[in-house]
Amino acid sequence: MAHEHLDDVKRYLLDLQERLCAGLAQADGAAQFQEDSWEREEGGGGRSRVMTNGGVFEKGGVNFSHVYGTQLPPSATAARPELTGRSFHAVGVSWVLHPENPHIPTSHGNVRFFIAEKVGEPPVWWFGGGYDLTPFYPVMEDVVHWHRVAKAACDPFGEDVYARYKSWCDEYFYLKHRDETRGVGGLFFDDLNEGEFADCFAMQRAVGDSFLEAYLPIVERRKKDTWTQHEREFQLYRRGRYVEFNLVWDRGTLFGLQSGGRTESILMSMPPLACWEYAFEPESDSAEARLQAFLHPRDWLDETDEDTGLVNNGEQS
Image 1 (tube, rainbow, N blue to C red):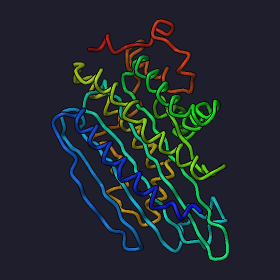
Image 2: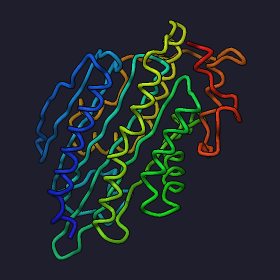
Image 3: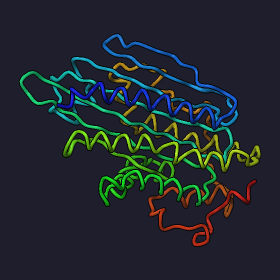
Image 4: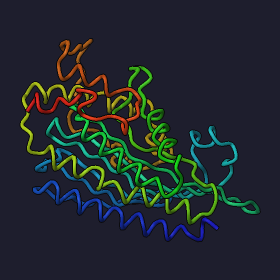
């Protein structure tokens, strides 16, 4: 059944890429996405769109890919032996935004569909995706807004969906070697194939369609905030953690590289600049030190600015 709908999913994802690029370019105000189409020798290809040195985004990318083949990479079959000997299609859109201003969070998201087939057996298929936020100088108002939009996207599909996908995001975007989350989380789901195909597809669309509503108000609120060289240096230091996660823990990066995907598109998520400082410790009670309070799972929808005292943007701008 699912393979019959592959074209429907693909059409949605291509349209989502268009809408994301239009909304983000408008928010940036100075740059446009440049398109780069590519083909994969083993089957498939994609449409990468990248923005650099914009008015807001130092680097941003929104990539569409559709890859297929007769054999899955070892990273896939090791985790799911039932995929051995199956041909596959993997289609998705992924995006990442690296603003120049340290007061605007980095953000990442993706929505994807996978199907593996074998003659004489039912297809194996599922949806996956989500989005997450990585602030450097977090503001509680922004974090709460982000999670409210995420919850609203999930609510039509069950009262427990947001809590499950929020928890999954916290667990997935976790740097075990640093004992901290990558940011303040959001949503993450995978292996979604319970019930009707149409319901699973609708869940994927709800996530993809809600991203701009979650992210752009934060961009608009923070893009005129002034920032110092000290804050810029801290942003570059924290970007190093982003790189560490993507290269050490991210399953999507590993799958893309092992399946013969286009390296430039897979590593598009990397920031244009990052740095590492040996044994760095922020000054006690500084805004940089208070970031740590945000890097552990918590129920953001129970937080308010007044309750926590964790709003630090006003102290920095």
